[in-house]
Length: 132
Image 1: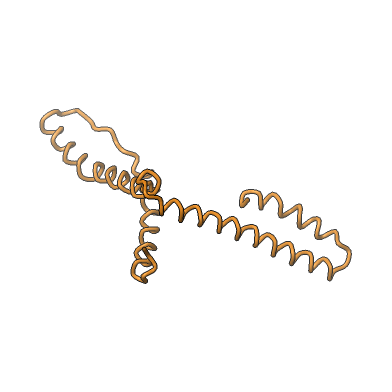
Image 2: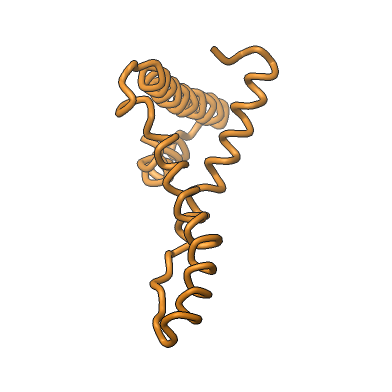
């Protein structure tokens, strides 16, 4: 619904702008804004319910996808920052001219940094006693 909003708003604004009475036009604009807010709130509420049901699921494959993504990012960054430098040094000593493939750390950091922000919010929830 959020993706449709930029397409619908000019049309709705145009329709409201065609109302000749200024008071009726202002009332219609206010009602339109209230309805848009209601629709967006309902959409957010539905997504929150889906998130809560997913997190409460007993299966690790359903509830554990966020930790799995985090661990994969940590593993990839660990390999890139610890294993590769040590392996590169060993290859330089024992097999000169051999190179190691590089991991796309921008993608890993692009996933990990927002997750760490979410993790910080989770810590705040735990400190406030809101976590289960």
